[in-house]
Length: 237
View 1 (tube, rainbow, N blue to C red):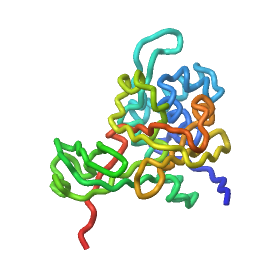
View 2 (cartoon, helix red, strand yellow):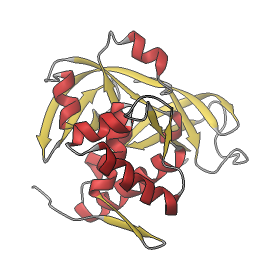
View 3 (cartoon, rainbow, N blue to C red):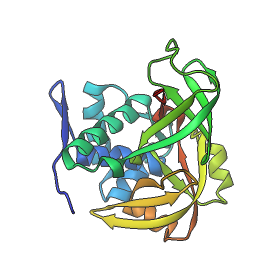
View 4 (cartoon, helix red, strand yellow):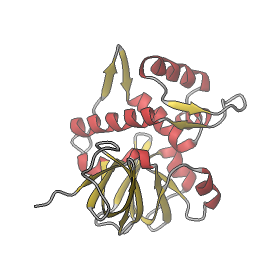
């Protein structure tokens, strides 16, 4: 069933809509505001102006590095990722597609340092943040845990993209195989088998899908930052 809903968030008089979320996702996947605007078919000046309006109210969403006319490289701040996660959760509730939008991976904690947890899982090594903060004692070494994140927090790379891997701050790198591709309305859901109990859905722009030329059966690496994932201990029943 196709679901066509208009989702927006409002904070201090500024409204964040699907167009804004798409811009932030594109910055995350493309690596710069200029490239994000191009991928979305928008002008750089328009994208920059809109981002400025959002940041005046919501705080820093994109961290920029000085460069040429396009503004250099850009990455999302923690606040930017939190905003995307919040938007995705609201969209999940409204559209009723929670299973497709939320990723849950099971693992066992190998070590913990402050809020950062490293866990072993069938999909590979996982790095995530404890929900309750660095003083939360609920997650410890040896605990069975669930690592959750949203489908739009994951990016895809070719398996041999070793140079990109050294330049990214995404500590989670899960090798897998594309099992399905569903493209519509300028975005694509790429389903990837990473060896977990269930395949992982990854939401990317149609431009990113075309650039990677992804089809079922293709090998791929799913990457995401530790700050985009949250870890909770499995309840003991």
